[in-house]
Structures are given as structure tokens and as C-alpha cells.
Image 1 (tube, rainbow, N blue to C red):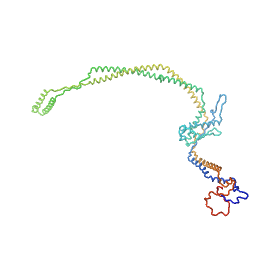
Image 2 (cartoon, rainbow, N blue to C red):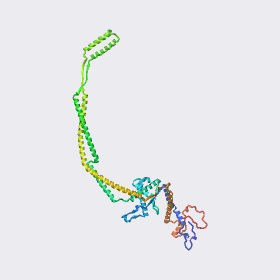
Image 3 (cartoon, rainbow, N blue to C red):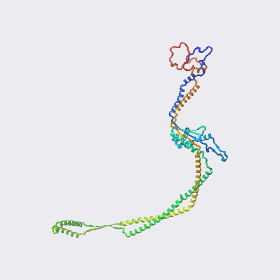
Image 4 (cartoon, helix red, strand yellow):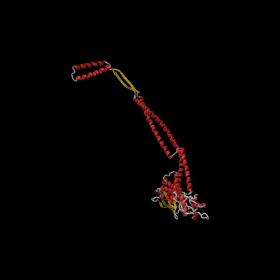
Length: 517
């Protein structure tokens, strides 16, 4: 690093070269920085790269804002004892504002709002099950910012979301559910006596309905009036069917008797066919006679009766007649008998009518049995009707009483709710709205990465410099060992070309930092 001469070491003792310099200087800091430059630059570059990557993946978000005005009302006035004593407790402004803030930040209110809008709509990619709802509520708590304006009763609300319309819609739903949610919180319960009376009547009504249902199941009664009317109709239908069946039986019996009478006078078999056969000779003579008569007719049309041909034809005709007189005309007679179809038809009709008559008699017997069953059921219903109507009347009276009490309670609660809604102490000063242009944290994230890189580099450099165990400069050696440095050899001396000629005189030169020996 430098050449040393006798001038640096006086006869009286050893003099440090760095003794004339201050104990710490900017040169030492720069020297140490260049020694640890790689680690320092790496500590600077890594946060910068992370900041750039975060800025590249950052999305544009929209901030919907709204303001609410909280007025003083009876909700924050409590009466611990008798109101006539005047010992009411009233909360101050800070307590009221803090209570409203806690209601707005309630996880239950956030869950109702997200379910009303839709978890997948507010945070796309999340499931709509219970786990997804819990994650959505946690993200909603980080995106929602609710603060109070100092020295005022105004609450500022802001909600961040990637969609401007969704942000405004969610904030509107949050305000709507907040008003109804806080109404349920501040809702004062009604008198315990009315609730107890309603519960008592409900139990009695339930018991009466169970008794009525059990009685109906045991005796097969669903609706007494309808079943009695049904029995009356069934009895009338049975009577009509009995009359009609009796008439059909009489008609069928008369037809069967008439058929018996007709069948008694009809034979079962009749002659179906009768024929006599002729001999071959008789058939031949007949054919010859016909031919001769045809020839004579033709000759007569041409000649007179005394013409020889005509007389000859007449002799032949007379001879054939003589032969036919001597020959028997028939050789045998054929007769064939068969079933009388009329008798068979009447017999089949008789069988059919007899079967119908038996069926009608069986039907008549069944109708008589059915009439007895209907009469027994009618008598049973008449005997059970009194007890059944008593149970039904008791049920109806209890039902009317319960309806009256429930109606009165509902009207009371509705009146109280309307009164509270009319005197609500929350006003919407600024409706939910969001700017057209969204916010992008890209530049902020990049700048934050640079700042974090600078801080990380400074911290790493300070830690390495404070914990280093090497000597960077000659002054470090003299200061730590309290010894003079006789010779300093540069680390890069071997890479440099050797000087052509030594300097003529020994002089002090300052070179780059190196290890001291």
C-alpha cells in the first residue's frame, strides 16, 4: 500500500502512520462498503425485485365510501330500576360512536352481508361453503375500514374491492343489514307474562290436537261431517242398487221362463238334406229327347209338318218317349239330419240368462250385506260424534285463544318496530359511491421495494461491518494490533505489469486498500 522509510520511525520510538488520522472517517466506511459490495448489493436488489414483482401482479382496486350520522336517541338510555326514580343511565358521544363502530365491524353482520350479495361475487374463486365463508369474512374485515370523524357524530365507511359495482353494492347491503341488525340488538323484549301465556296456550292447543288426532286414529275418523255425509250417500246408493238389481232379477227370470217354454216345443234335430239319384239310361234318354226336340223345332221353322225329315224326327221322339216309359226314373233316395240351429241359439241364450240370474242373485246378497255394514258404521259414528265434537270444540276454542294472543303480541312487536324505525337515530349522510378511476398500488409497491432494499442493504452492511474479523486497511491493523505496518502488499500486484525502473528516490504513495502484514 505504501513504502516505508527511516523517516517514519524516529530514533526515540515507533510512530504509527495512521496516528495522524482520526479514529474513524468516511474513507473507512467507503473501504468497508467496497469490501462487502456484493452482499450489500444483493441485499438491496432482492427487495427491489420483490417490489417490482408485487407491483406487476397488483390489481386495480376501487374504494367505495359512505358516511353515517348517529343521532342521540332512546336506544342508549337505560332504565335499571323504576323509571319514576329518575336513575337512568345515558351514554356519552364517544361511547355511542364506539358502540356503533363495534356493530359495524361485527363478523355476524359481515357474514349476513356476504351471503346477501354472494361470496363468489364479492371474492371470485372462493367456495360458498362454511370454510369459504370464514375466509371471506376475514378478507372482508381487512378490506373494510370504519372510522369516526373526530369531534363529530359522523362515521366514515370505506370498502376496497376489485370491482367498482360490487364495492358499492356490498357497502349498500352492509348499511341496510346494519340498520336491521342494530334494531335487533336494541329491541327490547316484551313482557314475560304475555310470552308465558302464549307458551301455555300453545302447550294446551298441542295437547288438544294430539287428543283429537289420537281419537280419530283409533276410530278411523278423519272428518266426522264428511264421513257421515259419505255414509248417507253410500246408503242411498246401496238402496238404489238393490232396487235396480231386483228389477234385473225379475226380468232375467221372466226371459229364462219364456226360453224354457220355447225350447220345450222345438225338436233338437231336423232334416238338413234330401236327394234321389237317376239312372244313366234315363239321363241319356232325356238328353236325346232334348236334342230331338231342338232339331224338330228348327225343321218346323223351315219345312211343313208332313215333310219327311220332320216325320222322321217325330218317330224318333215317339220312340224315346216309349223307352222312357218303360225305364224307372229313380234308383235311390238320400236323406241327412242335423242340429236345429234355432234350438241351439235359444239354448245358449238360456244358459247366458241363467248365469246372469245367478250373478244378480249374488250381487243382491252382497248389497244386503253392504247395507248392514253401512248401517253399523252410521250407528257407530252417531255414537262417537258427541265425544269427537267435544274434543274438536275444545281444540277450536284453544286455537282461537292462541291466535288472539299471538295476534296481539305480533301487533305489539310490530308497533314497537314501526316506532323504532320511525325514530331511528342513524342517518345516511353520504350514500355509498366509488370513484370512476381505481387505485393501483404498483408505484407504491415498487417504491416500497426500493426503500426496503436500501434499508436491507444498510442493515446488512452495518451487521457485516460490526461483526467482521478481517483487516481491510492498514489503519485497521495499526488500530487493532497497536503495531506499525512495515510493508503493505496489494492483492492485485501479481496481475499488474512490473515497473520498468525503480524510482530514484523513496517516496510515500497511496494505493488501493489491501491486507496489512
